[in-house]
Amino acid sequence: MARTVSDVAFLDALITGERAPVVDLRRVRIAIPSDDFWPQEPVDPGVAAVVRDAFAKLRDAGCTLIEIDFGYTLTLEGRDDDAVVELRRALQLDPTYWRAREELAGALARRGRHDAALCELGAGFIIAGDIEKAGAIAAASGESGYRDSQRRLGEIESQRLRVRAGEGKYVAAFEQALALLDQGDREAAITQLERAGAVRDPRLTFVRYAPKYRAIANHPRVQALMRAMNLL
Image (cartoon, rainbow, N blue to C red; front, side, top):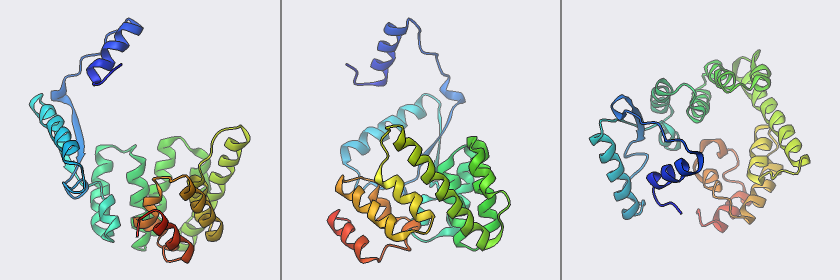
């Protein structure tokens, strides 16, 4: 029924009887990925052309586009110090950007700055309104405190997943694997990743590249899973 945002807005107006508000793009700033995050290859040329055209239209309309790396690709390259700088830039633009705060905490912890990492996690939970998780790490400090907090957060998440499953809601194996990995139960986590592989969960790509999974990356079962997913 709709092929463009304009089509969607038109249909919405017909259904609701309300017109979409007019936004002055000259007062809007949008962060966009840098070339390091979104290289020309292997992005499909057709997709790249459409995206570049959209960026050009936004600029012509007066919108300010800010190119930043977000730091995530830097963590994949093991450049955590550079990642910290870029992730802090991302949070200056949007303090509620949880992914950036989570990646920042991970980068800080890998650099041995565990108290700073805990501070970022705590701030993120408070902003998100997750008082339970914020409270679970409030008194933690140092490397041992950081590792213990990861275990507690994993336990909280596992409990929430069990509640969701008990309510008849779908719980992805990949989500269960994350919670188990945080608790330090690597074998159980790998079992859930294998279940995720059975349904071709696209998030398994993270296992191949993201720092969070380095502790299990060379496990024979994980290596077999990566080969089965054509990631090796």
